[in-house]
Image (cartoon, rainbow over all chains, first blue to last red; front, side, top):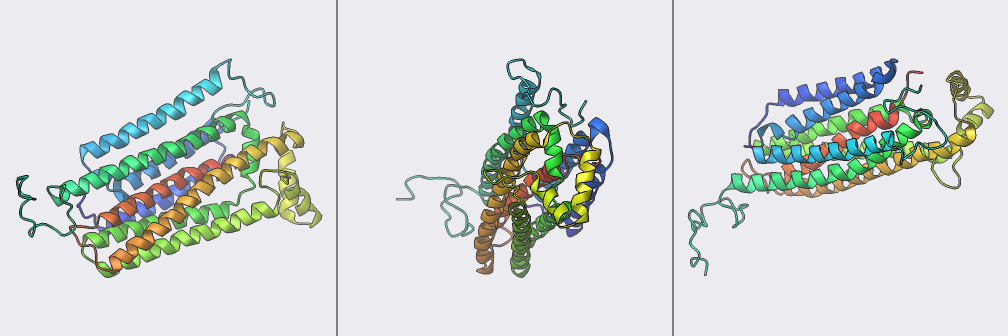
Length: 110
Length: 257
């Protein structure tokens, strides 16, 4: 049940992990990783968000029903983001705007 | 008459917790219903912000150079500080819930008050950042002027502006200033919409915290019933998560060149 009481040390650990994650994402932004800058930034953000959901928001101690509900919502978010981007970046009927002939999703221009 | 409908375990009205509603059999059942309901609400919020993230992604793909250039106009110092402040407020929020779980009324109130304070610090920093955007004609609309920032800095002899201009040349932009004037407005439109809606959520969050702090102060909560603190916490952490994504997307588009 969600009435599980986490130790203060756990909350402090998560807090410091989130701070380190923030420092990492800033540091990574100043390193030229080419096409990997964007995935790395998003990976760190997803990791930080997962820590918050799992420990701060007590998802770890919730019922399967609640966990499944969250998973469902994230699934639809993935559809929203994924399908829209596939359409807008790959289809002829949604042409790229006239200003730029080629830009890539990950950020690197070529 | 209440005894017409017989229900096991429900006739002993005096025995249950005062906060237990009559349509729930037990406190844990009531708690789980609240948690599930809150998460369903947060999912609608995720998809609500999701639409904005999609819009952001499409325009970022289309006009990456404009997004990279405009993103450099944001202050990493203020953005980073706000990220730290918000993560700190999530910690104090989690500790407030923990204090409520352990029957610690005094610290429930204290941690909630600290959470609100950090929330207000965040909003204050946001005001400083917005003010800077208005002062530099970087708010989309009739008065938007992409070149004002560099020209103004150069005219006043600020080194930063000259450096920024030099770095801009160094990056060999393919967009003309006229094109940037148009496309960077897309970035700033999304910047103001996304951070503005996030700030609105923060304001609502502080309002919720005020009520919950007052309830905690009145001694409404104990280790069996602290649902409002927990639900307020879920909302607060959710708003923190939105910022965890907004920070790299808006402030760190391309900083390495």
